[in-house]
Length: 241
Image 1: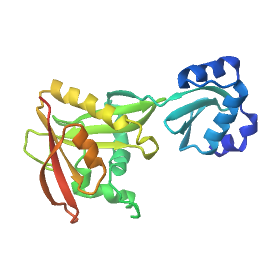
Image 2: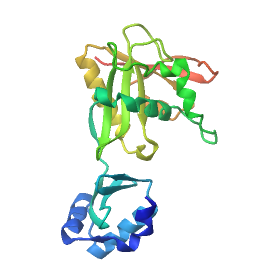
Image 3: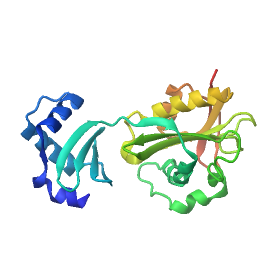
Image 4: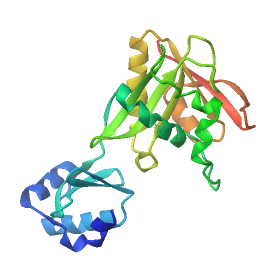
């Protein structure tokens, strides 16, 4: 990341690359102006990821691809992750997404990462894939998983009954606010229906803005109660039929 930002003057673009960006982003700019726009985007990037021969620069819902060695700008396009079932080989990423799913109110220090080892929290991913109801979907962008949603039949914070799986969903911070969560949920709903599940539950803190996100997807509050550390939680449920 630092190498790319330290060498912005080396960035350049071919006529074909400039045309790809004009088409993908509906931009009417000369090649020189596109290079200047890319430089500014890199300066202010939300995240820069090196993968293979390329660097991927994310800023305001757009990803810019730069060839790392030559500093050639290859293309830029809106972030459009592929939404697909999660592979068993990818379950190892669930601890990170479980941690990222923890709601941290503004002004509150992030908890230590080992908080997910709390048995009541770790139950959402322990031996995931080993029993019925363990279903997951992933959002993949340029080969990287940037979001995940999964379910499990368990007696967790959002438990309703033995037939209703509980939901967990998490998007990496750099990719929030881009509609990834909605796409993940719709894909997961489809998979749950295909597996014969008729409803889905979750638990969300009452002051978490995500509550409105869930309501927009058709979840309704069925109960309000304090959680295991005293926060006011809402148990929500969605019918899938």
